[in-house]
Amino acid sequence: MIRKLALALLALALYIIPTHAQDTPLAITINSSTSSPHSCGRVSYPLYCYGIPISVNGTAGTVWLDAYYQSNSGFALFNVQNSDGTYAFLSTANITGVTPVFSTVTFGTHTSMQITSIQVALSFIGDPDGDGDDDSSTAVVSLKFTYSYGCSGGRVYSCFWVRHATDGSIITSAALN
Image 1 (cartoon, rainbow, N blue to C red):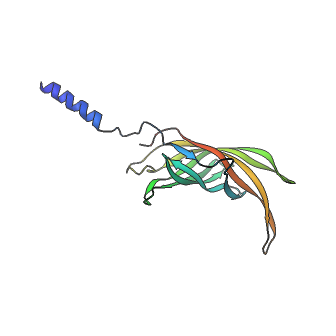
Image 2 (image 1 turned 45 degrees about the vertical axis):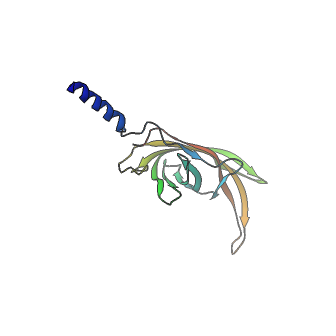
Image 3 (image 1 turned 60 degrees about the vertical axis):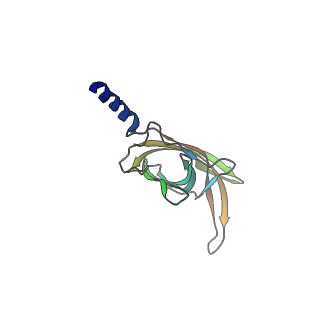
């Protein structure tokens, strides 16, 4: 009888106590599209794009991507806040690999070789899910870009290419724990 009671209590405890690791990866989506692109500003090296709209498990936020594609390095900073101002998800990820695709782009009479899509491999740092432990997770960011060409006056008149993030995805390969 005591053995059955002990087994029943053990089974109940295993059912009630959650496992340390989540079973499913974070659902991170990029909220930029061809019809509503996100401007990354002037074309630069490293590939720099701040404020790309995302959502993490349904909560809106942004990601800042700073990718050195010639050396497979850089970082991504995720910032997702709840409506009360507390952080739902705040994390920095190291870039561990960058695969750019270059194509010729034309805007009016201007033509240039630019990055039209990129895949960035990430390794998360610290405790992005805020549960008080160190997490290990990786992700792949895929982005597509379009370009425009513009000129501005002022003290110095200059013309430049502007990068726009259109479609993309972020796929986490492992759940945060």
